[in-house]
Length: 424
Image 1 (spheres, rainbow, N blue to C red):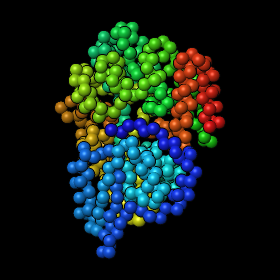
Image 2 (image 1 turned 180 degrees about the vertical axis):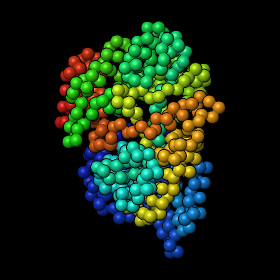
Image 3 (image 1 turned 45 degrees about the vertical axis):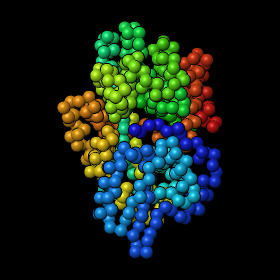
Image 4 (image 1 turned 60 degrees about the vertical axis):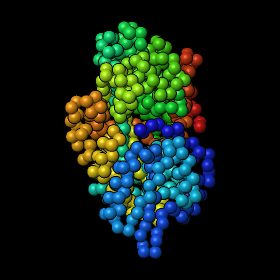
């Protein structure tokens, strides 16, 4: 469900945004003569699949909070960025909006969101996983409330790995060896990860997992180091030794899914919830699919994708909006939504539920969900929110591609990528 957005670049070009935000005075909140309030709540592409869930939760909240009505508006993925920017700049933003920390942080830097540290107590924050709450902060200030999560696991084709005589890898070092064995024994590829700069950030995250800082405290490139060159060399070697499909340079993560479902690659890094899709599209592959932890580096770090709720600064009903956001993200409601959507909750208590810790009947989906949940205490957002993140990814990916194609040496590619970022 949760997928990588194209990074929002309009903010870097729009010098008027801060002026618009400071001038916002209206909001979508409405009040009647009898003092009742209506708050507007936006989600991203969760209707009609979860209509029953949201209608029930909203009805329960309204029953517990007389005088407050919630109007739910579902917005398509592709439209959310432009719609929320337009609404924020016009002062007509909803009172509660479902975003992700990366995009929300870019608007947080412009003062778009209600300061949460002034209204949420330490005990209320402690309900959530600490690293997930941290992912919703910018410069030490909280701008969002954690909601649902997904973390990649590794699906593996048991038949292919058995033919190659290998176990599913859990580290990048093991992945390189497994890739060689699979190619030698089956003439298939072990793995597909995209180097298209506008697509998945998995390769960018691999730098962090292999112990490389992407930027330093002053925002300058921190990967022009021996450790950074080693990661460039790692991916370059895999490609030049023909252990990655050449399509990794031109095709996105969708191609990885297609290749796995057709039995052409042995491993697929994606969310546990995607097993349902594999069962539908490729039942024969699903029958031989096992689940193992996310591939990582010597740091042991594992990535997580976070969805959150933000409250626009312009809301005229901050107390009601905050009450609803905390209600929607409490243990009970997060657990219910996680079960309905095959995702993970961001509250500590909900994550301890036996639904995640004891796979029912040991079904493949339950096993995958258990592997995913077991990673959550350590999982974190590996690439923190920052301005021009899309520029950083493009600089690294394009220069890494040049090294892979032998157009540049690894040393030159790293130096050029760092210079491109520093001189942006």
